[in-house]
Length: 413
Image 1 (tube, rainbow, N blue to C red):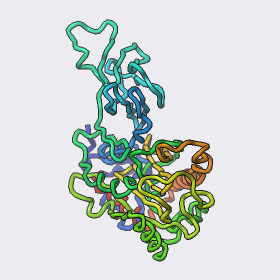
Image 2: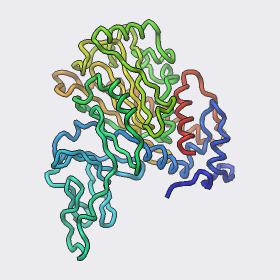
Image 3: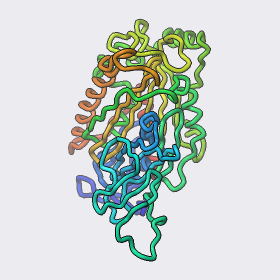
Image 4: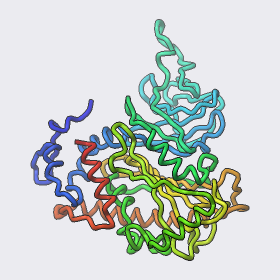
């Protein structure tokens, strides 16, 4: 049952009970959110209903489930989903909840199964398409066809697996266009996962996303990132570097359609998505420790253009593409003050580790960057939880964070 914005009340530290609608109305434009939006369990449940489970979320890359029987599981909030390729070669998103008495069915993070999934509680057996096949002492008069694993919506776009829990999910037309304009030109459809790593952040999911949406923190917090990325110095980057990047891409026959994520929120009923470009510093060709190449060129690229392309989709899925590798950021809210951040590194589908690339070099930059992000966001949550916290004003370089917050408030109201 959904939470009503008018009826829902929040207990503040001072013991006041206020309606969510009143709290939203009291937000000061151009300032960060009030404390309760970061530490109130009731608001977190509202967030899950409206912002997370109501939108499309990237679950991973299709190369992780390339063959029939391949699967992996993901967890968002209290929900667990099995992404599995069936014997009919179709991908499905099965809810990891046994139809008998509700146990988790699959306990592995990833693997391959020849037959299906056996519930560890009472051994009900489900096929890879979710159908119940075996159930000991199954009640007479009931049909196994009525007790298959439930499913959520699943779509594969440019090799990326998206799922949505909503009964009627947002449209994907704008998102498809944005990904085709961005990562599609880097050949992500034919890429493969080189490495994946999760980082548990002890903070509300919005603090994690707000951090991702701005680079005001990059110079003081990410020295390694700032050496290569011009966006750490200014909101848009050096005009000369942008011109160089654009000219080099055009010389390879590659042009980009830049698309805004939130204005004018695409079209009613559509999932927000964007595509935008940012230059690298003059002596860098990719996101590496020394700025030098890491792996074989991908997609349409026959050389390095001195840039990086960003695609951001919905509230929790963010991607960046270099000519020789890609990065997937998946932000998974787990509780009011815990968020799992998974980072997935992509390379060309035929690239061979230790031959075409070295894993430690490939992962170095975004591993140290993610560790630094965990540290500063953990500290952010600790400060926001103080009785003395007051919302502060956004700077020019935090304009995208401000717009994310404005979108968030509109969605949960």
